[in-house]
Image (cartoon, rainbow, N blue to C red; front, side, top):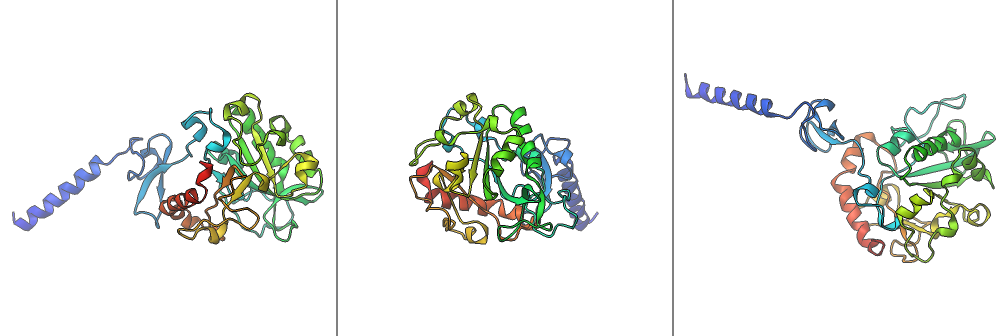
Length: 314
């Protein structure tokens, strides 16, 4: 047998051993190569990201729950958790109007799945529409048949069911609000959520710490709701977002490396009179293909940048 043939044989044996020694049957760990979901250990699934890495690898299927990772004895503002942008704008969401929907989507999971997968804050756009409160991804402060997703109560009932089934969890809702007076109060009441309501009177002013998570759970005050309409804090007891929170720029303007500017409605991230910070990191035009690339090293770098800009929060 020639040297060339020996080399070919050794190469073939090496390749065979490499394949044979690859993990499978639920033994593959985070970032190990895989061929199916069944190869990955619990909490992981097999995922391909052409723009991030070659082949398929095991990645996390759920987000780490910060309240359980540490404990629940710290103030609420000392935890970081996942927020879903336009949580209601779900790809394939059933139609509730007589015409096809013509607007952008941002999520693949239903609200219940988002919560079960680790999201603990939801950004929602609420509108007056068709005699009720609806979720819409619209423009000009008006909801239309082509931009409507569904009645808000359908989404809110999913949140109520989650809070009822998970008695130690806290959910935060951040509302872009185009609803008339008392509309939100009615729909939250009808959805059975008022029993979980965290009252404005207990929210800290001037950048002070929030109550301990353990106390919020013990008092069953596990739903925080923020509105973009300032007057509703006094009239309906719904917290005005910008009294308590700062937020960086959303869309492409918030994805510039090394920069973490505030969005127009927010004071600067260095505002010490606010004790909550919301960090956006997503493109102005959503793209499934780029999601896996965005939610990797560049995201970590942006979090470090925003951490430096708002370090007094932590």
